[in-house]
Length: 408
Ligand SMILES: Cc1cc2nc3c(=O)[nH]c(=O)nc-3n(C[C@H](O)[C@H](O)[C@H](O)COP(=O)(O)OP(=O)(O)OC[C@H]3O[C@@H](n4cnc5c(N)ncnc54)[C@H](O)[C@@H]3O)c2cc1C
Image (cartoon, rainbow, N blue to C red):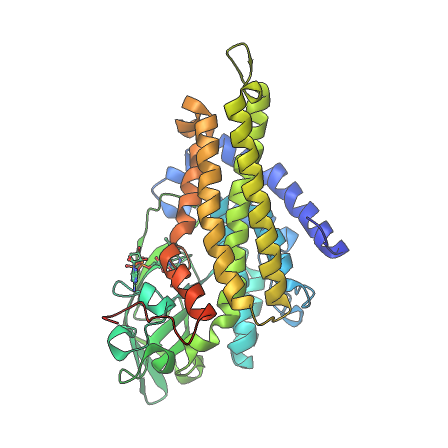
């Protein structure tokens, strides 16, 4: 990649060494581990501890609280570089870590000082401390991304102010780190008479708050080392000062979602890079029909296509990440474009990898099918591909584009 600063080059180097020394050997030697049905036993704590030693668990936390604050002029590009490297080793591990970065950026921007003082040091002190960001509900996600801004489509999870406390009732599902987080950012409807951009508030909810119950860990097809969960709130009371943003929480969440989409695309690129590296080794060593696979023309064509797709995703990622760092006017559009483009292109890269490995591509212990499963997840994380397309068209043509929801 061109244009990296010295700091970024060094970070990439140490992340790559961590992945090659710790993560990849672990995954290759313990391929059954992702299928352990006790979510607590899947990823050994030692891997998070190793990540912690590198400082990549607490990126985004202000230095004043012991975190690793990157150069603010290129922070999002640095996130992209590190997320790609970690996901090259394991996308689920990357998922686990990046939620901490994304929520830290949100808290740094939106949480009152006393909450930052309370929670950042705890995050820094405990290598197992994870955070989660809870928007999606059984009756609504795509509508929220658009957003379809009418009361009928607003959040079902409600929060009502009762004296000195907010009382939260509702349910969130499909939440990254939802199963094992220590701290949750929760979005809830505080004014059902208006659309979601004007009536949604966000709260900080510690895991041990009475009324918060983690009801399940979802068994996903990919990124399985991140424990995706479902959380129920029943008369869950948080102090009044745990409010992060009143009423306009969705509009303010851009500080989370813009870097978030860059990080998604970067993790996705890491999965594609791993597929390419494994495949290029394979086709240059595996002999079929008396010659190594790469000598077969069809194999050469597929390999070229994989490399070209990766280069295209990387270029758009860098453009979009730079736009976010520079707060450029087209940053929002580029974030949606790269998240969408990466998700569709990397699935094709992973499919080539699967096919070029022939029968071995279908074997769990060979590890290539895992990359295909990991790639498939990105199609619907942070909005589905169709909804992302709507968002791009709505942003490009605000005066004439449709609502793409309801009856309109
Ligand atoms: C691994 C994983 C991690 C996730 N992590 C989080 C997290 O940390 N926090 C969080 O809040 N959420 C999280 N999600 C949820 C994710 O954001 C949603 O799954 C996604 O936004 C899609 O919403 P949905 O599943 O409700 O699909 P639905 O909204 O039910 O959509 C189903 C289908 O209908 C289509 N559709 C729906 N509405 C329209 C429309 N108006 N026009 C055209 N087509 C439409 C969609 O494109 C899709 O094809 C995660 C999901 C996954 C899979």
